[in-house]
Length: 340
Figure 1 (spheres, helix red, strand yellow):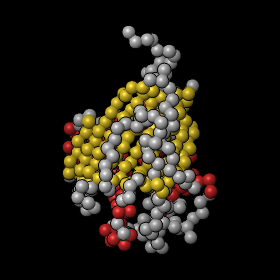
Figure 2 (cartoon, helix red, strand yellow):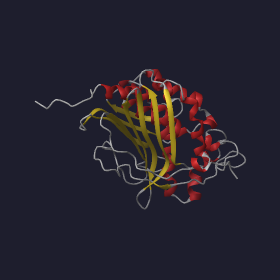
Figure 3 (cartoon, one colour):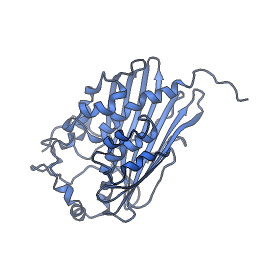
Figure 4 (cartoon, helix red, strand yellow):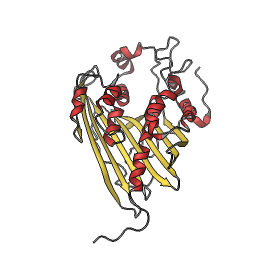
């Protein structure tokens, strides 16, 4: 039967990934492409890329930061190799450890990178995106064969892991194990926008692959930091095109001086289970908190059935908004002098 979901919370369908860039704004985009050269059960190869693009007050644009992350993990999600640009030798301390359980804690201990940098966003996304990545195979196998291959997942009790898996959800059997019935829709191409600079250059592999794509636009409106963001997990399909697995949009406002979050509106575009959108009702628990602490506070305020793993990842990245706003403030308003 499931849990009733108000009509206004129901997913709206895959959406365009980016509005026109605003003069006097900064846009951070990131993509994480997962592939399996040897098929399901072989190594997982990750190609992560990110860029910060400043759109100046005169409408011109310049890149201010870029990052790359390359990682290979085995079938048990144990990291076999990891390299980055900018180069971070401390990442070699993650070799032999899980790409999921405890990854963020080990990254924090290593103090490997600036917590608001594009590279840190890629690294912070590793466990959540790795968790989702294997679902890319679901449309490449017959349902029974796929369930056999994922038998370990099928046996797990998932009750209250997240909002979508809360007790009584239509996603779960009475014993708390998953019902393999998910809502999937065609994914809007993230580059289906009239702007060659909307996204950085990213890998576009053939065959089975999963992509996590993020965008966060930040600009200053008087005494307010404003944010417009996008989040999409999608995977390739055997007959071409892509399917959306998770997709959200989000707008937010915060005080420029205190950097306190004042307004937050997430919108569910695509989610796998009927109850998943109920998570958006709980984000008011973050209002009044400082942006800089959200990577920690989101997990404290929206644990288990109060949160959606993927929405939480999106909310946590709002911690980068002050650093992005500082890039905007470094571009003074008004006309720019002509080039010499």
